[in-house]
Length: 111
Length: 113
Image 1 (cartoon, each protein chain N blue to C red):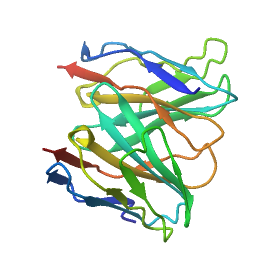
Image 2: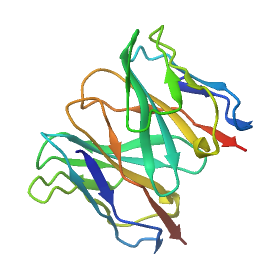
Image 3: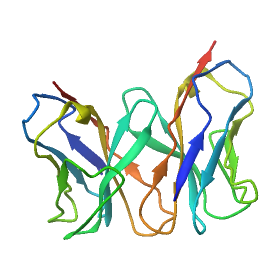
């Protein structure tokens, strides 16, 4: 079946530290991959996406590369800010409509 | 555009009560979905719809009903609430095409006593 496994949190970093949140997936076919972010008290917002192998999604300094050989889509940012504190969800959408989410990783960035 | 709207924001029910969570979108999206969010489990798909008059089950459909009589609205019904349905519920919509972004509503926090 289709599933997403995310690095367990919570993750606490100091401002300007390097961030990596690991995400691996299991899927049939060729899914699209997504990272969503959820700020406190809000719904999820799309952060970035990649639709085929070797694609790199990027937004707001965050990046993730679709690695088919390792079935991974790790989220990275070179220098985090306090405003990046949120919960991050990795997700996949196979060719049908059933989108699958990881459990979420809570990031806290301290000044 | 208001995007995806959900009502109510908060709700407390007693076991056995029924209620309907409302969801509406004004983006003319074909696809609409309901998810529940529980700690440590991410979002799980309850039901989804690919267009008016068409609905299908997701991962965790038991205890919930949906209908899609218009493109704009996709209500979620709890027929007989149980404490296990205590959760945060999100409605989402997107246009056709598996690459397209899914837009989420602000959520409804439901507590079943």
